Image (cartoon, rainbow, N blue to C red):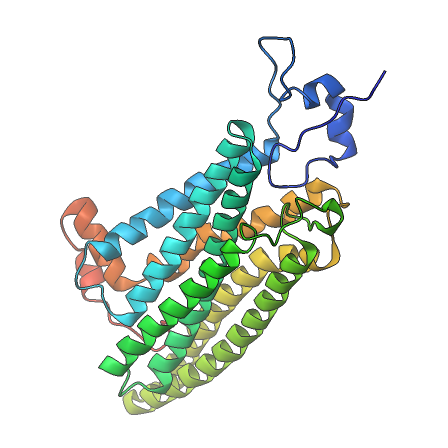
Length: 335
């Protein structure tokens, strides 16, 4: 009797399932996606894929709100809002890619759809991380060159950053489609099939470099915020309290931004560097899922905390702006 072959139903490496999964699923169930004589086969859906699809749905809905708000408000055309819109669009595409991955994995299985789905997810998540770096650069420039920030030169620089980051992200996403994949040689696969080990390593190293650059920029931002808060406190003679409170708020905001980013992406980045396709797939799911949470948190940190976006959201939902929101002034700690 020959052993029945198994089928990879998603772009993640499911041919090496963990022990708990293999003990509870029979060989016939695992191969249920292969055409057999039974006219009503039982489809086995990986629970991790359901969680990723649910995460993608939440990402899409949340970021679609941000994209629509920025798109339908002509007043939100400043460089800061363009970059926030780029981040929301990238996360929106990432959520759609996760949904498509689930649909194509269980309904439209083919090598071409697998490559397109992986390409979309890689490109969108790359654009998301690059947009975060661009937002960091913009925040640094807005503080360091405060007097000349609102100039035509800044707008031009912002458009150049957007073109470069989206161009690079699209090129990265096209690599699997153009042949940089492991479909012909399984031994070169990374933890994300069909990405090669080299491809995943390049993406991981690039992420680490961008995180290091973001960390350095935010340290400089923190220094500028502390200096500005000190100057304002001296002018208003509130050095003992105002300077301390504003500085603490600015530092805590930066800690939340960098801490959230690192907590979401660092596990998967480091795992991609040391692991390959032979590792159990449960480790890939367990490290990839927190990375998707970063796209859920991004709108909360970068969009919904913004005063102008809050006003636009209140106008859309209620037709009015709360008095406490319209009267609130921006402080140096709002970085």
